[in-house]
Length: 192
Image (cartoon, rainbow, N blue to C red; front, side):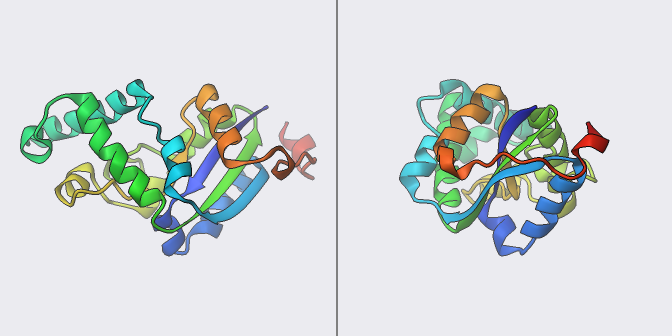
Protein backbone atom coordinates (compact mmCIF):
# COMPACT_ATOMS: atom_id res chain seq x y z
CA UNK A 1 0.00 0.00 0.00
CA UNK A 2 1.28 3.47 -0.81
CA UNK A 3 0.14 7.06 -0.37
CA UNK A 4 -0.23 9.86 -2.89
CA UNK A 5 -1.24 13.51 -2.75
CA UNK A 6 -4.14 14.83 -4.81
CA UNK A 7 -5.14 18.48 -5.06
CA UNK A 8 -8.45 19.63 -6.47
CA UNK A 9 -7.31 22.93 -7.95
CA UNK A 10 -9.24 26.21 -7.80
CA UNK A 11 -10.99 25.51 -11.12
CA UNK A 12 -12.31 22.18 -9.79
CA UNK A 13 -13.42 23.79 -6.54
CA UNK A 14 -15.16 26.70 -8.30
CA UNK A 15 -16.97 24.30 -10.64
CA UNK A 16 -18.41 22.37 -7.69
CA UNK A 17 -17.08 18.92 -8.62
CA UNK A 18 -15.14 18.12 -5.42
CA UNK A 19 -17.63 15.47 -4.34
CA UNK A 20 -17.63 13.76 -7.73
CA UNK A 21 -13.84 13.61 -7.72
CA UNK A 22 -13.67 12.21 -4.19
CA UNK A 23 -16.36 9.65 -5.05
CA UNK A 24 -14.33 8.34 -8.00
CA UNK A 25 -11.33 7.67 -5.80
CA UNK A 26 -13.34 6.06 -3.02
CA UNK A 27 -15.28 3.84 -5.45
CA UNK A 28 -12.00 2.62 -6.91
CA UNK A 29 -10.94 1.45 -3.43
CA UNK A 30 -8.61 4.28 -2.46
CA UNK A 31 -8.79 5.39 1.14
CA UNK A 32 -8.72 9.06 2.20
CA UNK A 33 -6.27 9.26 5.09
CA UNK A 34 -6.05 13.08 5.19
CA UNK A 35 -8.24 15.82 3.76
CA UNK A 36 -8.29 19.61 4.02
CA UNK A 37 -9.87 22.61 2.33
CA UNK A 38 -7.41 25.52 2.21
CA UNK A 39 -6.60 28.75 0.43
CA UNK A 40 -2.87 28.31 0.02
CA UNK A 41 -0.40 31.17 0.16
CA UNK A 42 2.21 31.56 -2.59
CA UNK A 43 5.09 30.57 -0.27
CA UNK A 44 3.62 27.06 0.18
CA UNK A 45 2.73 26.78 -3.51
CA UNK A 46 6.29 27.87 -4.39
CA UNK A 47 7.51 24.88 -2.40
CA UNK A 48 5.01 22.64 -4.24
CA UNK A 49 6.35 23.91 -7.59
CA UNK A 50 9.99 24.66 -6.65
CA UNK A 51 12.18 26.38 -9.22
CA UNK A 52 15.12 24.30 -7.98
CA UNK A 53 13.61 21.20 -9.61
CA UNK A 54 15.19 21.75 -13.00
CA UNK A 55 13.97 18.38 -14.32
CA UNK A 56 10.38 19.34 -13.45
CA UNK A 57 10.80 22.66 -15.28
CA UNK A 58 12.41 20.90 -18.24
CA UNK A 59 9.52 18.40 -18.37
CA UNK A 60 6.93 21.18 -18.34
CA UNK A 61 8.83 22.98 -21.10
CA UNK A 62 9.25 19.85 -23.21
CA UNK A 63 5.53 19.00 -22.96
CA UNK A 64 4.79 22.55 -24.09
CA UNK A 65 7.25 22.41 -26.99
CA UNK A 66 5.74 19.09 -28.11
CA UNK A 67 2.24 20.58 -27.99
CA UNK A 68 3.37 23.53 -30.13
CA UNK A 69 4.99 21.14 -32.60
CA UNK A 70 1.78 19.05 -32.79
CA UNK A 71 -0.24 22.18 -33.56
CA UNK A 72 2.31 23.58 -36.01
CA UNK A 73 2.84 26.73 -33.96
CA UNK A 74 6.02 28.62 -33.09
CA UNK A 75 6.73 28.55 -29.33
CA UNK A 76 9.28 31.32 -29.81
CA UNK A 77 6.44 33.73 -30.59
CA UNK A 78 4.65 32.94 -27.33
CA UNK A 79 7.62 32.56 -25.01
CA UNK A 80 10.50 34.40 -26.65
CA UNK A 81 12.56 31.26 -26.08
CA UNK A 82 12.92 27.68 -27.26
CA UNK A 83 14.71 26.57 -24.09
CA UNK A 84 12.48 24.02 -22.32
CA UNK A 85 13.76 25.04 -18.86
CA UNK A 86 13.03 28.72 -19.51
CA UNK A 87 9.56 27.90 -20.85
CA UNK A 88 9.00 25.61 -17.85
CA UNK A 89 10.00 28.46 -15.54
CA UNK A 90 7.39 30.78 -17.10
CA UNK A 91 4.63 28.18 -16.88
CA UNK A 92 5.69 27.28 -13.33
CA UNK A 93 5.16 30.93 -12.34
CA UNK A 94 1.65 30.78 -13.81
CA UNK A 95 1.02 27.52 -11.90
CA UNK A 96 2.07 29.14 -8.62
CA UNK A 97 -0.16 32.16 -9.21
CA UNK A 98 -3.12 29.97 -10.15
CA UNK A 99 -2.87 27.40 -7.35
CA UNK A 100 -2.80 30.24 -4.83
CA UNK A 101 -5.69 32.14 -6.49
CA UNK A 102 -8.51 30.28 -4.74
CA UNK A 103 -9.37 27.45 -2.37
CA UNK A 104 -7.90 23.99 -2.92
CA UNK A 105 -8.91 20.59 -1.59
CA UNK A 106 -5.81 18.62 -0.55
CA UNK A 107 -6.13 14.86 -0.07
CA UNK A 108 -3.78 12.12 0.92
CA UNK A 109 -4.99 8.85 -0.59
CA UNK A 110 -3.80 5.39 0.35
CA UNK A 111 -4.17 2.16 -1.54
CA UNK A 112 -2.67 -0.54 -3.69
CA UNK A 113 -0.28 1.17 -6.15
CA UNK A 114 -2.01 4.43 -5.29
CA UNK A 115 0.35 6.66 -7.29
CA UNK A 116 -0.05 4.76 -10.56
CA UNK A 117 -3.77 4.19 -10.10
CA UNK A 118 -4.50 7.82 -9.24
CA UNK A 119 -2.44 9.06 -12.20
CA UNK A 120 -4.38 6.72 -14.48
CA UNK A 121 -7.71 7.97 -13.10
CA UNK A 122 -6.68 11.64 -13.34
CA UNK A 123 -5.65 11.40 -17.00
CA UNK A 124 -3.13 13.22 -19.18
CA UNK A 125 -1.97 16.65 -17.98
CA UNK A 126 -3.52 18.49 -20.92
CA UNK A 127 -7.30 18.00 -20.64
CA UNK A 128 -7.95 18.17 -24.40
CA UNK A 129 -5.67 15.12 -24.77
CA UNK A 130 -6.97 13.20 -21.73
CA UNK A 131 -9.01 10.08 -22.40
CA UNK A 132 -12.76 10.08 -21.74
CA UNK A 133 -13.40 8.35 -18.42
CA UNK A 134 -10.52 10.15 -16.72
CA UNK A 135 -11.19 13.11 -14.44
CA UNK A 136 -9.50 15.57 -16.79
CA UNK A 137 -11.04 13.95 -19.86
CA UNK A 138 -14.55 14.14 -18.42
CA UNK A 139 -14.46 17.59 -16.82
CA UNK A 140 -12.25 19.82 -18.98
CA UNK A 141 -11.39 20.54 -22.60
CA UNK A 142 -8.83 23.26 -21.89
CA UNK A 143 -5.62 23.06 -23.91
CA UNK A 144 -1.99 24.09 -23.70
CA UNK A 145 -2.43 26.31 -26.72
CA UNK A 146 -5.34 28.28 -25.26
CA UNK A 147 -3.64 28.51 -21.87
CA UNK A 148 -0.39 29.79 -23.36
CA UNK A 149 -2.18 32.30 -25.59
CA UNK A 150 -3.85 33.66 -22.43
CA UNK A 151 -0.59 33.53 -20.42
CA UNK A 152 -1.96 31.14 -17.79
CA UNK A 153 -1.64 27.46 -16.85
CA UNK A 154 -3.98 24.88 -18.32
CA UNK A 155 -7.06 24.54 -16.14
CA UNK A 156 -6.81 20.82 -15.63
CA UNK A 157 -8.91 20.42 -12.46
CA UNK A 158 -6.52 18.33 -10.41
CA UNK A 159 -2.94 17.55 -9.40
CA UNK A 160 -1.65 14.08 -8.53
CA UNK A 161 1.85 13.15 -7.34
CA UNK A 162 3.96 11.84 -10.21
CA UNK A 163 6.15 9.31 -8.39
CA UNK A 164 6.99 8.01 -4.90
CA UNK A 165 9.61 10.70 -4.17
CA UNK A 166 7.19 13.45 -5.19
CA UNK A 167 4.38 11.84 -3.15
CA UNK A 168 6.53 11.73 -0.01
CA UNK A 169 7.70 15.34 -0.49
CA UNK A 170 4.15 16.56 -1.11
CA UNK A 171 2.75 14.61 1.85
CA UNK A 172 5.20 16.37 4.16
CA UNK A 173 4.48 19.75 2.54
CA UNK A 174 0.68 19.57 2.67
CA UNK A 175 0.00 17.53 5.84
CA UNK A 176 1.25 17.39 9.42
CA UNK A 177 1.65 13.94 10.95
CA UNK A 178 -1.45 14.48 13.12
CA UNK A 179 -3.51 15.21 9.94
CA UNK A 180 -2.98 11.63 8.69
CA UNK A 181 -5.27 8.90 10.02
CA UNK A 182 -5.06 5.14 9.86
CA UNK A 183 -8.24 3.09 9.77
CA UNK A 184 -9.74 0.11 7.99
CA UNK A 185 -12.43 0.55 5.34
CA UNK A 186 -15.36 -1.85 5.56
CA UNK A 187 -14.66 -3.17 2.05
CA UNK A 188 -10.89 -3.74 2.38
CA UNK A 189 -11.22 -7.49 2.97
CA UNK A 190 -13.30 -7.84 -0.19
CA UNK A 191 -11.07 -5.65 -2.36
CA UNK A 192 -7.65 -6.75 -1.14
